Amino acid sequence: MAKIFCVANQKGGVGKTTTTVNLAAGLAKVGQRVLMIDLDPQGNATMGSGVDKRKMALSVYDVLLESASIREAAVLSEKCRYHVLGANRELAGAEVELVALDHREKRLKAALAEVADDYDFILIDCPPSLSMLTLNGLCAAHGVIVPMQCEYFALEGLTDLVNTIKQVHANLNRDLQIIGLLRVMFDPRITLQQQVAEQLKSHFGDKVFNTVIPRNVRLAEAPSYGLPGVVFDPSAKGSQAFVEFAREMVERIQKM
Image 1 (spheres, rainbow, N blue to C red):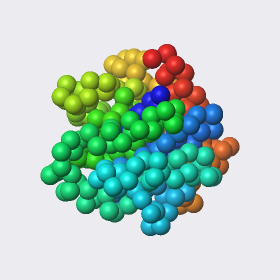
Image 2: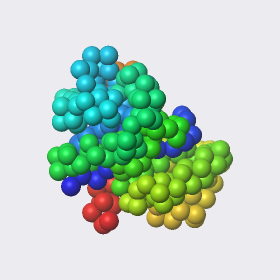
Image 3: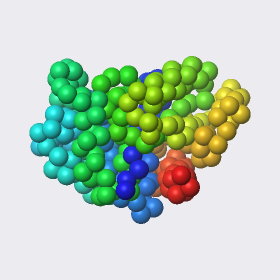
Image 4: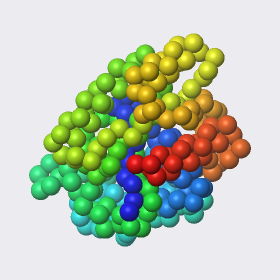
């Protein structure tokens, strides 16, 4: 039975997509069966997984509108060794179309029920806003992985996200919880980042993952080659950190 996680943060530019594709590649590398779902109309996680969003016959849009199943729409990224349910600009239209439909926030959850035994992990890359697409992700998930930079404004954004998760938990998805906070783009030379990291640890305790993802040029370069950093340059410090994070995720799930 697959564990389903959203990678979410209402603050933009915190590395959600980088986290999603590199965690997916890391999990595949340590022997897990992985499906990565792109819920962002920009399709960055799709392109960053080696799948051309312009050439997809079917996408997550078709799944949400129930004109295709996940088994029909998902494709295998051969270089990355995980399946991708991709997104493209069509998905922006789904926001409007879903409003008038029944069970609009539970459509992804219903589709995932059919493939739950096919995978060990299902990772969902959410848009930065709290939209109908993000809501579909949160309603389908067992938990949320929150990537965040150790900066002052990141703490403010985290408060908003925690409140959103509480609301979804109370009204739509009783399984939903924060699985953990992942410190990304971390530079230990910056005193403020160390202070914020300590604040997170003291406030959230073991909800903060032990793995820290360093600021890394190779991770930043990888998307322009259409690959996660873990695949593009496995020897880079950022890539090795994501593989370590994948191992930590597997361990944490076994304890749940």
